Length: 221
Ligand code: MG
Image (cartoon, rainbow, N blue to C red):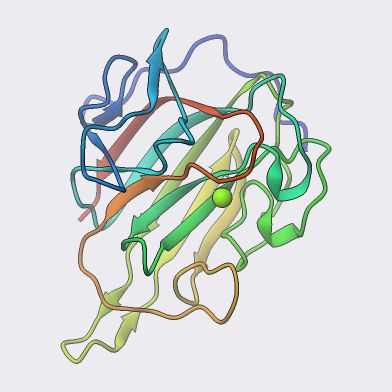
């Protein structure tokens, strides 16, 4: 699906949004590895992954929310498959051992990979309903509604996590009920939690790092 051209400038957040990255400073974010202020690069209103720093996550914890995020694969991207502009929006991040729930970010413009690993996929669980990718060098948007899983007092699953996602305004996930955390290998499982950080992935592949801008969230619970 051709989503049309990227807007010339990002739209202003709604008045009740919590801005997670508005262009200057990453005060809402910390490094996963050490909890220190996020070490990614901020320049020209844009946040760029620093793979030597690793993943970053929000200071705050969230449960149910709407998030808007814009991302750009660099025009000079290299590599293929999962090694081309790989990042990820972790809608709930449970720590290094467990990982969490990843909406994949990848250059899926004329780049073949397994379909449940392309941009707009719930990683290894749900194929996007369309490929709405723009070419490298252009800004792309995610608009996502996340409903966290609920757990009974004994830790058993009461209701699954659900996700609705638009990629460049095109519906790619329609109230998908997750089977558990998104895992690279093995069967998804649920592990109880109440609130969790949002995480942005610094993937270990050698392709040039991607960038983000205009990240905001509206809490729904
Ligand atoms: Mg990823």
